Image (tube, rainbow, N blue to C red):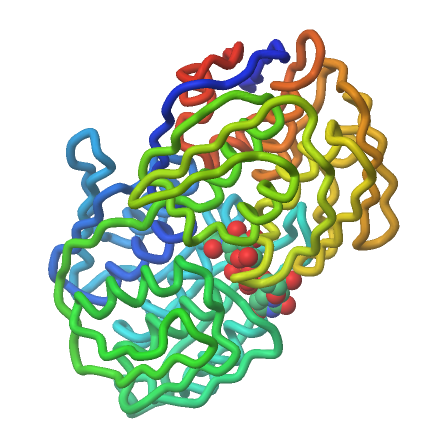
Length: 422
Ligand code: UD1
């Protein structure tokens, strides 16, 4: 299993190019299931989750290809394919549930494994099921699979008003894709507003879908008979950009993020500025400068445009070595403090009580061997390793490879002392 060896204490300087967003690319790959025409995506990040999603589609009978060095991919989903997502593939990636909506909408049936347990919480899919049932699907759960079909005599889903119990990102995406090909109008209340949603909606519109209100909490979709192919550019990864911002804020230095979208990171950038980092942003770039210890910042994770749960662990690493005490409240997932014990191994002073972590900032962390437990926890340990005294080994970095495009190469490019040990 690969590990990362990091020698901390170097400031970061230079330029990094931000890749396409994992959480946009995954639903957008699934959207290719909605048409028999070729669908081209550009700026797809090179990640394990993308490879897994590709395998999932390959396995159904979709022709998938990569093009060039710039993250080009194409997908052709023929009229007859096997609309199944087996456990072996779904278990490694919860986002596999995103095939359910498009498969039902185009083929009228789907068999998708339940995602199973997940390190950061139970993460059920009840809302996905309820919403698609409201659109007329018959869904039973048997032998660990969601088996979905349309009632006898129906060939399409029907529009519905769907109000989910909580804001769900992949739920909203599943409904958007399903509703695009349904009969009649669908209204999504309590829709997620994360930038990946409007990016998917724009892609669907380019395929011929009729959607209004994306980017707000109420989305209207007027279903159409058929969708056609399109070419779409995957939006920049705000979480990757946010991770680099926190890394530079923690180590000090001066870095420009090319293709970074500051307008998708307001909550994180506000906190970084309050902490004392200097951040400038313009069309397609974000520049961050920092020196010395920053001021610790308290925050609560909430849905977009609030502070993203996917940035909680990375910002906590920064708080560990900032001046003052901070309180971090995780409101989205019930078990998303697994990085805490590992940060403590590096010398951090953190107490947790339920969904609250209190961090007492200290002067410096000390290198040690730590274990990555989930994707964003891994990123937080990398940031901690970059500022710790001496050598840090981050074990189990396959979590990092799931969601970051060449993170260690990008960090090395801006001066970090980091290498992968096979
Ligand atoms: C997506 C992101 C993930 C991010 C999360 C929250 C992708 C591929 N993943 O995950 O990186 O951390 O949004 O911003 O885009 N819930 C239910 N029942 C459901 C659906 C969700 O109870 O049917 C709960 C979840 O357990 C969680 C909350 O709702 O507590 C929000 O989850 P959700 O927005 O659905 O997360 P994902 O879409 O899985």
